[in-house]
Length: 366
Image (cartoon, rainbow, N blue to C red; front, side, top):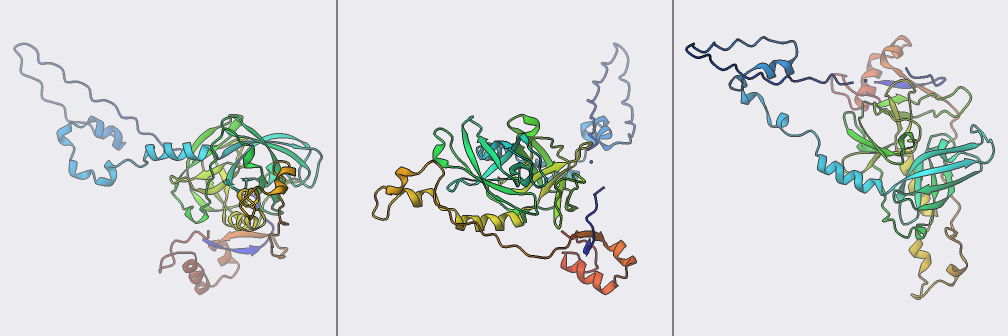
């Protein structure tokens, strides 16, 4: 737990030990005329997995195995259905920055995005994918249908952005969308990252959320870096091309937006979706649904549609109001704040507000 103090954002600073179970050796047959040799007493090993493999079946107390231990941790059938549904909303994004602008240089790249509103043709991805300057982009769906993209909104601070496309251009693909569930993120949640990892068009990576209060990662000393927000962290090992991938739970809801990872290690960082959800709701007010334009008020064809190019609906100006606090905050732990004069009663109140127990324990500050 901790509190946020005005400061300069600092750079931030995981494998399961798989138990190898040895199969039990078959008992040697008794020699003719000789009494069978008594079984040897099993030798206790340092690992529980080895010990249980060496014990005979009669020595295992079935009462020690509870219902929670016997039940599977994950429903693989549910995950298969979820990934199949979500993959229909995931696209490969090809972008070309025609000139250097702000923190991004000119060049071409591949990344990932996913549909968050199928009726309006809204695709969510990262800010560093859309680029703040002039960009030419197209989306490739899983059946290899391509549609042109138009930049709709690029957040000036946080690493998320929206493209738009015309859903009517898809002739064969069954379009799907991924709902956002920012409040579903919690430590220990099993997730999947579905996207164009390492340029493989569609990769599915597994991870478990380990932190909800990780400092915003610092990618470059001169380029773009996010700030004034927490990030989610897990050891998914995502690499290039997976920027903009949805981080989904077993219900197919996006709980985070894949943004970056460590080059030497498996740690990956996901943007929380609270601000993304707010921006999406405001964009929906400015983005008309296609069926509202294709049907005239009298039930006939809208005459304006005959002169429209694909995706050229009349959109209202996008207005996403923001605060004006020009300060960069850094997250500091309670131990460091105590050395700065934090009082005990203030710490207790903060821990309780963060969801800690009555004795002051718990609370991650997320």
